[in-house]
Every structure is written in structure tokens, then in C-alpha cells.
Image 1 (cartoon, rainbow, N blue to C red):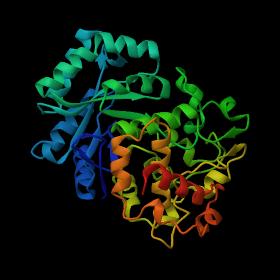
Image 2 (cartoon, rainbow, N blue to C red; image 1 turned 90 degrees about the vertical axis):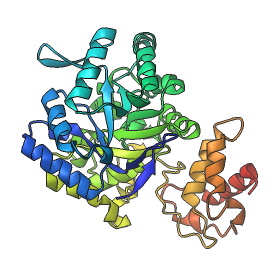
Image 3 (tube, one colour; image 1 turned 180 degrees about the horizontal axis):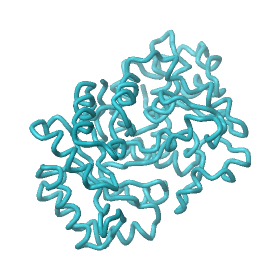
Amino acid sequence: MKYRKLGRTDLEVSEIAMGCEGFDGKSQTEVDELIDAMHTAGMNFIDLYTPDPAILKAIGSAIHGRRDAFILQSHICSVYKDGQYKRSRETEEVKEAFFQRLEQMQTDHFEIGMIHYVDSLKDWQLVKQNVLPMVKEWKKQGLIRYIGLSSHNPEAALAALDEIDVLMFSINPCYDLQPGSEDIEKLWADESYEKPLLNMDPSRKKLYEECAARGIGIDVMKAFGGGDLLHADLSEAKVQLTPYECISYALSRPAVAAVMTGSRSIDELRQNAAYEEAPQSQKDYTASLMAMPKISWRGHCMYCGHCAPCPAGINVADVTKLLNLAQVHASIPETVNEHYMALDHHASECIQCRACDGRCPFHVEASMNMKKAAALFGK
């Protein structure tokens, strides 16, 4: 298993993580077996959203005695009341549910307190007024270590970046085409894909780049589009993707540290974890993206790595990603500059052979990006 630093936090999370909706309907024995399989595979990151509080008790029991082996992301404002789940912004309800969850999980803290499901600017203002002060106090008390927010709308997420450490966001090659909206169903509505689409939506691109520049780590939900992207007849783009292509796409976006996979069996969990050992040919999403009708990524670097190998040893995709992150700011963010300087080879070493240009399936002039990066970073 490979691990990534989650933004500016001190958390090292497994690239392949677990969303606990996959535990729904499982017995204690089955939950124990899934947690054991996670531990064996090196998966240390669990998102605890579930509409069933009994599952939280089962997971709490399963990790008892090895709590330190797992990084827990618990959803604040996710409330179970009158026999059903609901999202709440009522202070007392939110507080009661939070402390119930600590008890259910048999722990005295969560690594990430994830403010649940903020998809509108109006809702964010309500959360900021009613919920955020309480969450900040819990952070001071050590009940949570970092503040997170989950969202499907880049506009709402961008508004919250000053207040959070971690963002949970829905990322896949179809959703990335759609503009921000308070209506989550537009992400998979057929009519949203009827007209020709060109490249990533600017607000999503800005969100990922802002998160990277500010050191806000992203963990990904809905990488498979609820499973729809794995079937051509259900996929919004009418092209079947594989789980590994979806995971690879999400992990190659700026600021992304982990993908939450909703494994519903040990076999599924092991298959997802095996992504790390899979050959690059199984992770390569470029052919599938290029086959999507009415969709074009021409001229847009997708960080797919087809530009490699470089005779000068430059990681052209990484340099291009850092160039893009730097160009959206008046001055180069310190974190971006540090990552660039830490590269083994820099854009100034480019010999302008243009081999990378010829290999790019999206017709990006990578050699020109090397010139721009050398001038911008001075190295």
C-alpha cells in the first residue's frame, strides 16, 4: 500500500481508503473480517458516513485494541433521529450526535471531523454561523484533530477553504465536466451530457488547484459514480470505465490523497487494494476518456503520464501540474514552489526534443510548458 500526506495535516493516509457504506447490512463477524482485511492490506483510512448507527458500533468493536492503526473521518451534522438519518444544522442535535458517535466508536477523538454535505453557499453560511464555532472548539479540546467538509459543489467548497483542513469531494471524469450546482442530481442527469463538452469545468479545476496551493488535502467520494461509470449502459458518458481507471484518474488530480472505495465484500476490498500492484496499463484512463462521445480534453493536460519517458529525466506531468498550480496565483504559493524544487529534475534541463509532444494523446504542447516552468520557477 502507498501512503500520501493529507494536505498540510500530519496524517499519512492510504491511497486506497474505505467508505463504510460498504459495511451496511453486515453482521459483527462480517465487519470484523472486513476490518481485518483492511488492516492486512495496509488500508488505514476510514470514512464513517452511514445511515445505520449499528454499523458504527460494529466498526468501533472491530477496531478496539488497535485504534491507533486507523485514521477515522467522522461526519458532523449527520444525525440519526426517529429511526432515520437526516442532515442537521441544529446545534444541539449536531452536538448530541457527535458525542454519540464517539461512544459508539469507543474512542475519545476523531482524526477528521467532516462537516457533512454542504452543497450551497446559503447552507455554508448557516454552517459557518451555527456549527463551525462548535467544531472549532472541539478541535481545541482535541476531540477532533482536523476540520473537514464534504461537498459536491465546487462553488460551495471554494467558499469554505479558509476554514477547513480537509475536503471530501466527488471526483470522476464525468462529474468533472459539470459546473457547480446546488442540485446534486445534475451530476448524473442525462440532459447534462447531451451537448458537446470540452475539458474540465473551470470551477472544479480552480478548486483542486486552490486546495493544492493552500495545503488542503482532498479525499475522494463517488470515484465510480455510484457504480454507474463501471457500466457503459449506465455511464453518463456511455463508455465503460474500470475501477482502476477511476481510481487512477482521481489520484492524479491536484491535492488528492486518497480514494474512498465502498467495498461490500472482502474480495472487492482486496481487488481495490490490489490497484497498487497493478501494471500501469490497467490504470491508464486515456483511451477510455478519448472514446467518450461529445467530450474532448484536447489541449488539456490530464496528468496521465504518456509524455514519459523524458531523455533528460524530467517528470513532465508533475512539472506541468505544478506549473498549472502556480499560474493561477499572482505569486507562486510557497507549497507549490517547495514541491517543484524537490523534484529530481527541473524544466530548465529540457533539451526541447519534443518527444513528449508527440506522445500526448490530448495534444498538449508539453515542451512549451517546460519553457514556461523554467522561466516561472527560475530552475
